[in-house]
Image (cartoon, rainbow, N blue to C red):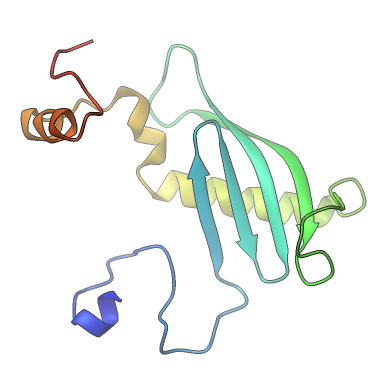
Length: 130
């Protein structure tokens, strides 16, 4: 959509809807406490944990499951034990993406007054410092 609007992509996640899919591209989804990374036919689920107390850039990824989406689109058969090289490759790709992106910086990132006000307007923050 950025390409369609003529906006710079600047490392945005995702891919162009106008180009052929790149099987080497990995799509990363981050959820509370975990990630999933899909590359080609493979999808890895892993736990994401930050140091306690949070330390800038320090996190661990623990693999939970690996699925072959071509053979198992419903994600019923965990292949992590049978495919340790694929798990290692996808974990490395996820670590690289997290190191490159902002996620490792979030635990100790301070919100600006504008960000805090906007989150408060949306109901995500009460406007007070915690």
